[in-house]
Image 1 (cartoon, rainbow, N blue to C red):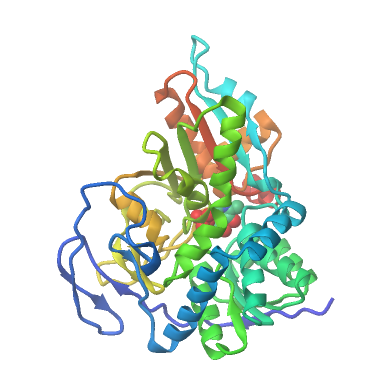
Image 2 (tube, rainbow, N blue to C red):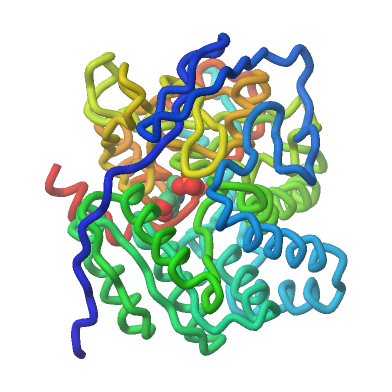
Length: 439
Ligand SMILES: Cc1ncc(COP(=O)(O)O)c(C=O)c1O
């Protein structure tokens, strides 16, 4: 097969960075100046003004004038499908017959036994098996929904960016299904870690463009490409990061995960989960599971970030919610990783999908209000968890998912007997075997 990879050089990322939570001066490489004050809200709430794309102070639309009209057009189309029965029916049928939804809520009996104390007591562990959906990860549901949206907007070309490659494969697959041209940007670092995903994207007919760097660089480059082709292309956002309406729209399409979990929990034990656990890269799979339960304050929501090689201050890591500060990144206010000069810090994790210096504005809000707990798991802990799930349950978790699974080691001994814990098994780790064996 002819190789259609094009290597590109990424430009430096432009971020408007706000340091700390007190009034400060915006320090940006665009030399913009403004004063911002972020106060911690006293009460926990769902997003405060859903239609404006603001989650408390987070979110918004910090973009060049050029992008306002296309984003408004997207917002109008998105709002229209929310009430459109025909769209909803087509999406539901496709999620069932093409993606394989609903994905199982699997009682991991051996993992549950592993965490029993000497009295035979401990939590019950369930895995939301997103790894069993078409494409091997949770990504397909959003890709399908946005491809349907692109068709409604009469767009025939899709531009997108991928990190670990799961979103790229999902986007390429839906473009094949709906006969859409597909251009996918991927960082060289991610392509080197998962070359098989690039082969899959090409086999599905996508044009893959390589960008020096990782996901952050791929997003920047794909956005530039979209700006050059605004009239003729649809930007298929992989993540709930970016200017409004993208965070709200992408979260809506992933929230099927939590909706199914609520129904399945009711069927299996007649109640709600007590604890929801998910890894956090940009925050999509976590939001997909959490969003349905934000108003149920008895349900703990725990997000796990990549600690890289360690958890010391100077180590390279991807712990944006735990260690980041508030600023504007890729068009929205969110937590982000920055240095003393307000420049974006290089991220690092054994799981490529966790390497991102920003995070969803909605998760930023949930963390900021205290509704969501956030912790760090380092590479070695994740690798151990990967092997544990293989050995105990015969399931390969994605290395991203393995970060959430690793936190069970710390969490389970603290939980009362019978606590129902749902871990989002966000993707399969078949392709991660080599990485694990070589570490
Ligand atoms: C399988 C899998 N899980 C988790 C993630 C982390 O991303 P997010 O936090 O946006 O869900 C990724 C990202 O590519 C992924 O591929």
